[in-house]
Structure formats: C-alpha cells, structure tokens
Image (cartoon, rainbow, N blue to C red; front, side):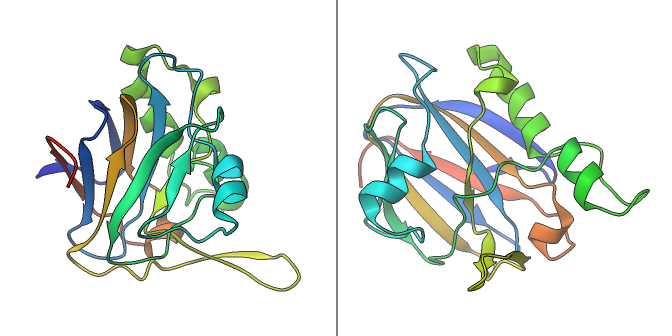
Length: 196
C-alpha cells in the first residue's frame, strides 16, 4: 500500500486490466482522481459522458467511467462507500480565494498538486478535467443548491477500479478542509497486476 501524504498528489501509469484500489485509512478523507489515455493525453475522463451512459450521477460498483471519446477508462469493481462526486472541479488556490474567508484559505489545492504530478507526462494545467472525487459527499437540493458535506467514509473504506485501457492516473489526498470535515489526512492506494 502506497501513502499519499495529506494535501499532496501523485501520478502513475495504470495498464489495461490492472486494478487500482484507493483506501481511506483514517476516514472522512477525499481523493481526487483524474485519468488520461497513455496513448493520447487529449483523451480524458468525462463526467458528462459517464453520466449520460450511466443515466445517473451516483456511481458505484459495476459502473463505468468513460472518456471524452466515449471509451471505457475505468470500471468500479468494488466500493464500500457508494458516495462519490463527479461534478466539482479539483480544489485550487482560486477555489480557496473565492470560497474561504480571507486569511483562512489554504494556498495550494488538488489542482496544483495534480498539475505538478502530471507535468512529467506532458499534461498541462489546462488539460486537467473535472475529477472523480472519491469519497466526496455532495448534496444537491430541489432548488439546485450544492452543499459539500463531510464524507461518510470510515477508516478502511475503499474503492477498486479496473483499467479499460493504458492510463495515466493523477490522484490526491484532497486539500480542501470543507470537503474533509476540516481534518486533512492521508490516502493510500495499491495497484494489482491484473483484473480481479
């Protein structure tokens, strides 16, 4: 199991049919995940395509995450939580500047951490899409208002995804206090050599 320290990120290659398991070891911690085709980084995860084909916005075991070219990137093989977000962008210095009280805002978010980790793969900041925000708990009321609530994940909860193609994965331990019940913690992950 590999640890991502609080408020940081990493990037790595995930080959077709390999599995990626993301674990919340402490509970109530979000992990932002983005994926790019290893063959062409212009092909990226797409929340819009995924929601279209799933006909729902709450993804869990058995659901497929599609690319902007309608190719299968990741399939959720198992999921102990069932609550994740695929609508909100990775938090950033601008997110904190706009949404947090002056003087209380972190200076670096998942966006900056992803940009730094993905740069060696040729991914620029403008290429970073909406993330699949693992364990993030977002509520939308009847009027369309969005509320970010504390994650319902508990220590040891996990999600396992199977790659449908060779991918570059960006993964963070989210930096946004409001997304993590105001306690920033580590995230762990593990890559298995073949499909489960």
